[in-house]
Image: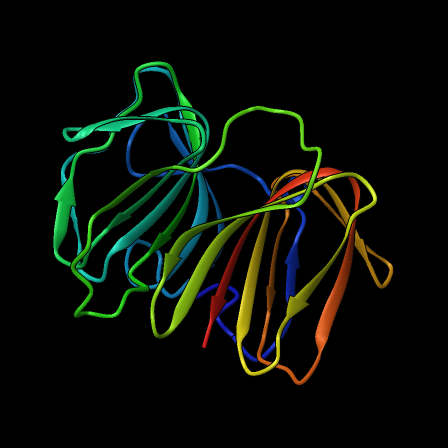
Length: 211
């Protein structure tokens, strides 16, 4: 078990995280939270070397993926950096990457009745000149957005009655003495306040809110 106390705030600096081997050659992982070594609730950053692959495997409670770099693939298609994917509970696939890639992955965290397959081209490499919010997913219990902030922009994270997760895809943020850089991950428990953050450089954020 790793970082599974959801009542406590958690900030993980990517630069401090080692890459750990997975069961498959050429696939490395940086675990952020997990209920067990190879099963259950898991959030991690995963790196595929060029030509690396995973054997076919199921996701009993679903899988959520954001492709951070390179091209991630499975038997359903090729997904370049910026692609957001949701594979429903009970789905199965055999992922691989011809050129190598990094992905942000959340496993076994879906409502068991969720059945939608989602494939969204979430962002393109373009200058961030104004605040933009792209909705990736919304349901009765969660909302997932991609947020682009220009340098100097202030942003409020509403944590009143809901848990929030933030992955900094690019850029840097500051808040109350904290500084978050690219690939840093923040998890904040339910609270009765808002968190004020400022983009110290143009920033791209993946933000997930849970009731």
